[in-house]
Length: 290
Image (cartoon, rainbow, N blue to C red; front, side, top):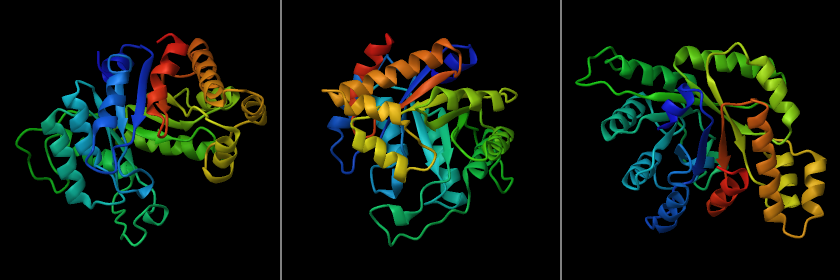
């Protein structure tokens, strides 16, 4: 059962995120992917995350297909104009990639090629609109396609946002553009997730809550100071500070959050972002009993 089938049937979906390698050595990428094969419904591949040069999301998605794993191909508007975005989507459709996550993308100033010229002709909503056009058998200019792709379209959302109403408005626009599922920024406070779900109960879309397992108090403090939309409560940081094995404690905290969210039906699934520690994802799945 794929991601679309799991979500549309009312199941609790699991996705994991993997950054493509920076270089042509794909051995670790493949090894980590094999570690979650058959245990998650799909694996996200990032699209030059943080504006850092890596193997492209399309290339990494093809590698996952070779490994028998369903990919979610992220696609940003930062590096491509409408011609390139349509071409990437058509290539994905022709190769059997079904899941697309539309993102606007981080500015190149945050990456490792700061002199790069950003494009940003299309944002995440526009990319969803483009994909919907292609699925209807025409390109953005109205020209007919020789075969249309079939995508399950997704987008991102930040539950911890002030005002939250603005995020809800963005979600509504993304749903109107074709989004069927959302993967959220990482959440560490169950009350934040509850408020978010209350505000979005009227929306017809599936939500996978983002989970980033913490590895240290320093990591938590860094995210609080530098990552918009993420806040790790002090009680969580204190648990890490007082633990002997901080990585294991971080995984335990993540597992507890996932199980509570599942039991209280606060989401339709979880999206695990291990950020360079993908080998820990199977451990977290074990802790949750998945």
